[in-house]
Image 1 (cartoon, rainbow, N blue to C red):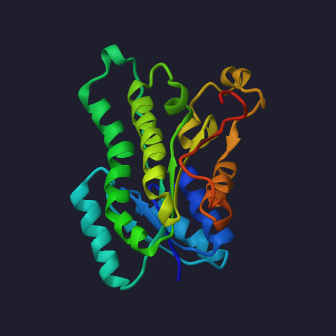
Image 2: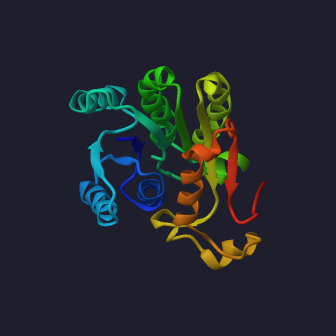
Length: 243
């Protein structure tokens, strides 16, 4: 059995990634979530309804001890198993002008995205190096690629992940491990449902918000063997708003 882990996989883009990697590539999906067990169970049920296999795994990506404890327990329960695909999707926003941003808003956003990438990937990468094959895909953002006012913390977190993607991709390429990032623009999810769509859509050449499924399809391709010569890349998926 082949295994893929998706952090923040219970809702939105994460859920679609879980479902799509399962359907397209036949991986057993480990659906990570922080607290919403109901949503995570719904993701697993949706995968199983389409003939796939999946399970939930609760841990907070920003907590190194929690990550290592839960992944270690999973490995003990699945001897010999290798998590071949890692999708670092977990993230939150706490928007506000930098001049008025408190330390908690900075730390929580940076820790979940950037420290979470480190905690999860660092724990799992030794096995990938010995396995001599793997796919690491980081879900970043338009904010991390171009910067976005009101999101200095989020831009910093995702921008850090972009830089890490480029560097790590060079370190592990000889072991047939690719490291890539996808940078969505405005995508229809719970995180964007309160945005002024009619105003923002004017800035998008494609004249619409993207679908979570479109992001999931891109991630699924990067997780496949077809993408073996693509690494260290940041692929924008934003309807032409920025490249």
